[in-house]
Length: 280
Picture 1 (cartoon, rainbow, N blue to C red):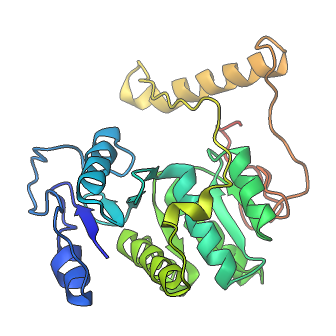
Picture 2: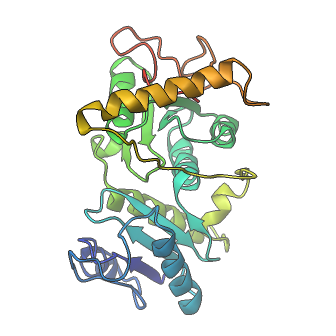
């Protein structure tokens, strides 16, 4: 297979010569493998549109089987399939869910609450359970650890940022390990006679009509920043509850918890709500 790695001048260049080349892959066309803390080409980030676009171009120009994008320290990753489709965010979680649920039927998948309803549907249709939890990859991973201690099988914990951990890999957020799992699945598909790329595993994932991320600055003294942010979010909640934003309602799914995926954690050993200052 031809696999293109875009390390973004972070520390991920090793994955070409220390892993892929030794396994017999063709890594011609790989990008920005030498570490450079000034990051002269683009931000090493699988969420970065430039990083994904550059990788997509390289995959298509070289007719490669896969493109890989790492962040600076390789604890996050994203991929581009052979057709040039970027797979990150919800799509990457869906891809990993499809792989994990084939290996561990009925597993719970823990994600942050920014994921789409389409992802919940994708997971449940494959026999999995979707547990939505508080934003922050450490929160998501710790929730998975806790569920396993409570006897609930949770083999994948992943945030939309690309941070992900697997139970089999000791709950470590490891972007390289995630990519290895994807490559193994590609090999399995090829040995099984499939000519489809890895993207075929998520062809049934529904796309949102519109998806926008807004990052807003809080204008205040540093010591007051959190309080001001909380005030803004609570005001947003009030607007929704009072019906001042037409067609909007707060997502609250009561006691369903892990079964259908929801924002309420009924385990008394953790904070009762997903987050005091977050609403969906």
